[in-house]
Image (tube, rainbow, N blue to C red; front, side):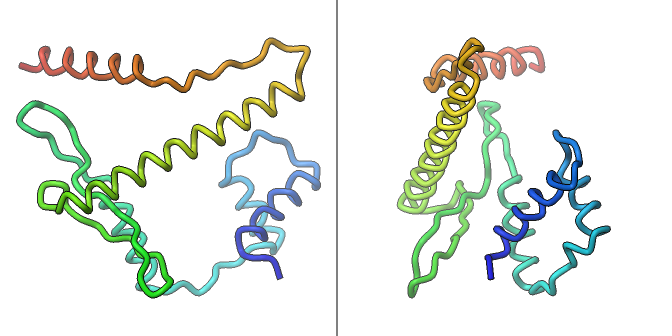
Length: 160
């Protein structure tokens, strides 16, 4: 039997094959899948759900330093233990350097992976519509970062 993710992907395909229109929200597809009897709640581990919610809350906790920089308070680093990958969380203000180096490196690799997939998707789209002007993507974010920092500094000066 296909894994759960593959099963959910098949629900999307069935939704489209049933003649439903796209673009569509995931909530609309969920409503349709439940109505069709294609999806039912699975018994979930209370501990696992709590851990997922705690991790989500940790990712969304921000603080502001004395320079007005809004920074993420908690960071995760994935380590392997007995053949299992575990995500270890630490407070940025108290974490050892080794934890933060690992966390920052892993986040950077995620960003690079997202950019790589975006490039493949854009290249594919441009390839199937050669008659259109190609959509261009710039993957040098230096100017974007400078613009965001300048806007943040401008906001801080207005507040002060």
